[in-house]
Length: 249
Ligand SMILES: NC(=O)c1ccc[n+]([C@@H]2O[C@H](COP(=O)([O-])OP(=O)(O)OC[C@H]3O[C@@H](n4cnc5c(N)ncnc54)[C@H](O)[C@@H]3O)[C@@H](O)[C@H]2O)c1
Image (cartoon, rainbow, N blue to C red; front, side, top):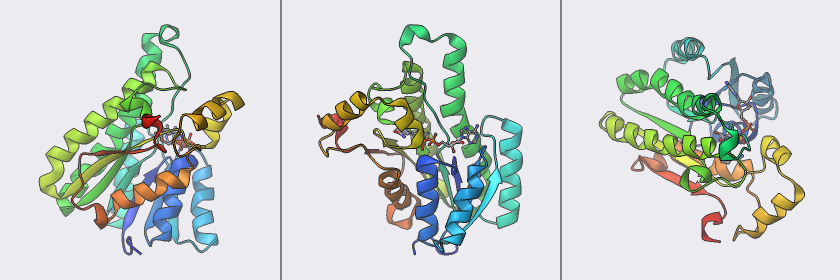
């Protein structure tokens, strides 16, 4: 029970990796605040409570709306008194080739992946600084390390930006005992990704993965739990690749 008496916010907790992370953190004792724009946030929190996994609450949250992010974080901080961790799972891609993208699409992708991360970090960092501690886990991607096989260049570059943001915050807030790290998943079989993949793409991805399979959201949740825990107390500014060896193929 690494997270007993800890409160951890998971954004994007209504589906996929965010949902799996919320369940994993709750199973180790955290009270998880499941934030999502979709009502499925309620299902995640209900599942955690009703299946006796642990304790969770659900909060409506729009990561693209600065005012909403500020308000929801202020309310959450004052309701719980202390926020020990923030897991920033909101993010999305779009399968496009470079010349299909215009400047508006490029900006939108950065808003979805970089500025959603920025807004949540900025909303929680003053509080973590004051309490002299906290753990933040951001979401990059194998696309931010290399070039995406599924999504466009606006996605790859936005996920590379998350790595830079994570490193910078780690350096600046290390003296406040705040660890800031990121996870770079490979292809993970969430509903969103499975809907985008043809059978052929799936087979190709499996063949290009030394461990021979597409990842599961739970594969990421285990690494998120490590980074959010005291086991990772001396780890900061890193991005952990969780991709079945995709890079090595
Ligand atoms: N699944 C993969 O293969 C994969 C690979 C690399 C990186 N990632 C990254 O991991 C993270 C999670 O991916 P996933 O596949 O679990 O995604 P997902 O689409 O399954 O879940 C994302 C959740 O975010 C929520 N959301 C979307 N817009 C929102 C907004 N404006 N405000 C609040 N919530 C919003 C959605 O409702 C959804 O519940 C993303 O940052 C993604 O880029 C995923």
